[in-house]
Length: 535
Image 1 (cartoon, helix red, strand yellow):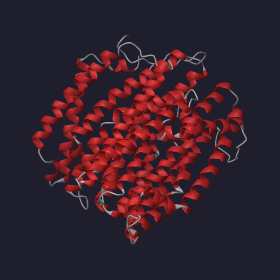
Image 2 (cartoon, helix red, strand yellow; image 1 turned 120 degrees about the vertical axis):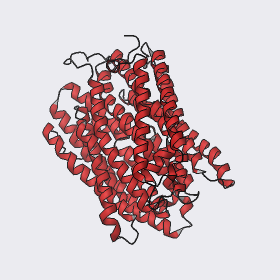
Image 3 (tube, helix red, strand yellow; image 1 turned 30 degrees about the vertical axis):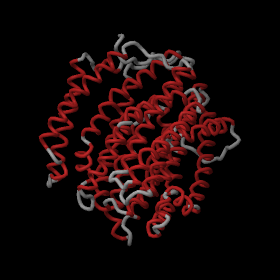
Image 4 (cartoon, one colour; image 1 turned 135 degrees about the vertical axis):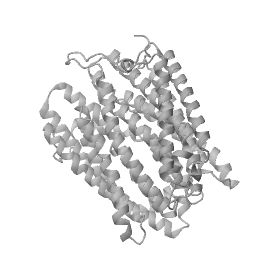
């Protein structure tokens, strides 16, 4: 069917695959992730109300983002992108002993490397804090708090990296539910830390750092036994000389930038925000948390599901199935990503007020966070597309091309951050952090464009028929959604002035439901049917 989103054909020699396989796996992953995001909203709401946009909260944001960036390298970023294609290639050979040996050696090697990195991070915490938060060096209390929190959060990297290795193996075997739901534990532990640990600290915000560490340990403890049911529970045997481990390491090197370009851009923003007014770190962090909702719910889900599928297509030399799967992922990413971006842009202040406003988080904080959320939301469709485009290279064990795109993207982000933020900062204009958020969003668009261009240049992406109709449907749906959301928001007026928080929640849910319904009805009116997402 010319205007439908194609489901790739079955792999040669494999058992018949149900047509909705990729869509169903993505739906399962998204459903499990939704639980985590709901818990995440509860965590963020409590966090903002307890700590506001204070210097202590800014310190935690910095101490959390640095090991979180490294997590993208050693966990679900570089390691996963390099590990999964090699793992699937060994699976294709059908040698179970070789598969188990590879997982054992990979687990032992990863543990050894990340153990050393975590230790060095703890020792070098003052240097790292000065590098990524230069604006706090002249604030001894804040700088000291960043150093203390870094020494607590760095060991988290070790546990979350091992958890990610286990999750990658499970995902490769089609087990998506448990790895997707374990992040719920992270948010529940953070909430518990704020409720029960925080009162016992002289600086309550330090409980957040301890919550991060405990959450990492618990996620690994829960996920580790799942590999036992596959007969693949790893034995930690470092194997730096193992040929397949060396292949993974070689593939990882170029991905150090490419698989975590969004996190790199956030770190660039973190550095610039440290010289702005107190609260800028917090406003940017909370905006990013809202942007992460659709990305985690859909973008990461599509990328996680499609990577092992693409790597198997490539290993089986099925170029048509490879291109069709990629086309399917891109269409689904835009179908969800464009309305998600538009929704966050239209409802930036209402969302921020509902989730964060209260306690120490004031109406002024709401407006400041809404500025950065509006700017950052422009990049959501591109962020989602990158989650599909990057695996297309990694599945072929091509890690150098995304690296080139990432380097250009980071350079562009730095240039745009300076261009947008410096004039606002020098003129002491309120909301200068919005320039950092805008640069992050535009850099995401630039990165997705580069990846798409490289794929088209190499002949790896061959668009299926029906793209014009697909984009027209999305445009009509977004127009209908915009009309409904603006009309209802106009009737509400100033969301920050609504005193009853539950009334704000009810109004927002009503507006979101009405907008989503308008989008869905418009798509149906334009001829889109659920089967079109499978065929």
